[in-house]
Length: 120
Image 1 (cartoon, rainbow, N blue to C red):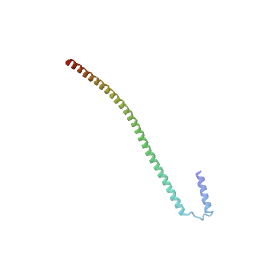
Image 2 (cartoon, rainbow, N blue to C red):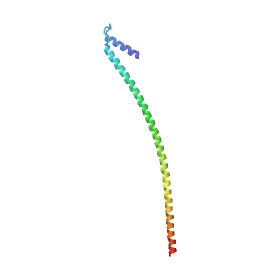
Image 3 (cartoon, rainbow, N blue to C red):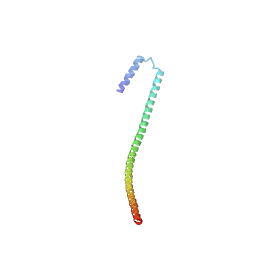
Image 4 (spheres, rainbow, N blue to C red):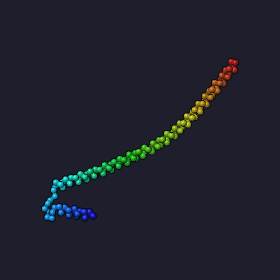
């Protein structure tokens, strides 16, 4: 199919130039077309390179986000465990403090009663 296309292009050029081929293509137009084609090829290559670089950077960012998300999840789990342990310790300390206050109150009452008996 590309051979047919090339043959058709050649036939069209020959028809434009005339049967005897007396008319020659303009070299300035050919240079302009070549410069444009070269520029277009360079832009296509540059854009492809930029796209590959951007996709590579996006992959690095995506991997970093996934890693950080995993670490954050682990930190949350660890923090929750520590928080529960601290709440349990605080509950134990409250119970011990309440017991100590009751014992102190009982000792004060006992001392007061014994002082009252001795003085009484």
